[in-house]
Length: 516
Image (cartoon, rainbow, N blue to C red; front, top):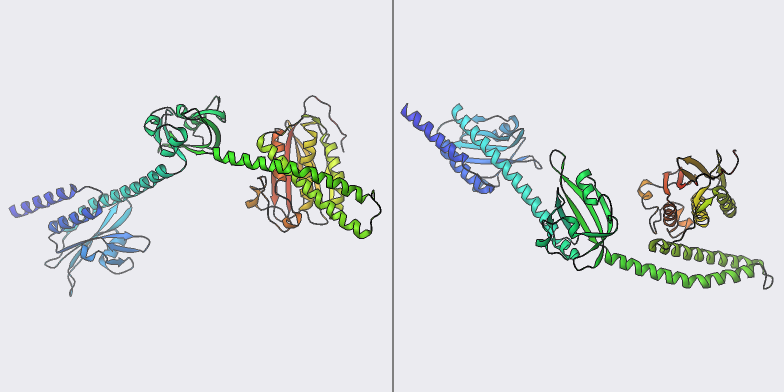
């Protein structure tokens, strides 16, 4: 009786020692557990096998001399069977094999591996199986915690590397808008030292003076913290510590707790001053070149026109043919120069509009008159559908003509012979929606996003034949938006496209046109 009590005391003491093993160094944990478990179960060999899901193996993590040993999960080995059943199992000694006990290392519903105990003297009883289960349960917690620790530590190291060495400024702010994280790039942009920025309000370090966020009733930071809003690529002119002005592109994002409440936020700041300077140089260069080209091209057009009208004498059929082709090429060059100049004016904000009430149906009629020849040459009819009387719209008539001409001309270019292009209208609230439809090759979803970008051309069977610079729709989009309108496209490959744009209706003015 005394011997049994003494043994129990020894077991309790050893279990207490096992419980005292803590830390995140798995190698040390394994070594200590192997030694203590061997003493507790009077074993000659103890091994820890952890599950490797990618290889469907149990991989030995100790002792060192068997550290490369593996057990396939589909084998008949005791460890594989105990792992699959999630039950502690034993086998008796046979031939050269010792007595074995295998207990799953399980944490909640996840089985992490097996602890395998061996000895040659006698088999394992129920009491020892229970002891092994206690050891495995405690080991499971330590293994899981160590894995979580290393995962978190690895993520933290990656985040710190990004935080320290990225060229973009990274600023973390708390629920009150005070800065709690400020990297070296943010310090370089603002001129404030990291130590000086920590704890100060975001708005005191990033002094916004335009255009987005300046004088706003609700600042981007407030929107992030109060609404959980994500704000991307907000262009902001800020003032640095020395009083200099820097153009930046700032993206904001909230951070949430487990309950979904906003606890803090992060801002990514990119210095775009140099990019803007380069763009201004490019725009100035294009503007100068365009102006210098336009004068001689216009003169060439005038002389070619006079020559084709026989003002300088009669032309042979062959001369007329080739001079006509030169005239067309010259006109394409003039159109290109005009597009380049418009793009430059748009980017510099120098485009001037004279907004008046305009009868859009008159503008459409002028455009159709211009493109009828091109449509006829391709056997494409251009039709206007008007289901109701059309109101006047608020627009610059010259620019409205340019918008409609570009859309109708594109529709003809990308239509198949024998089809038609339609211009349709719809009143929606305070806006008139104009739709230009074609039955051409259509546009894939992957290319729609780049349609309205600068030099953004799409690629389809007709794009090479159609030509162009990719500036037309970019200009159209900016012109529509400068009229407080909106433009969008719907398309199906092989079935055609519909370009829609809205313009505000002129209020309290008579409606023009008769119902059809």
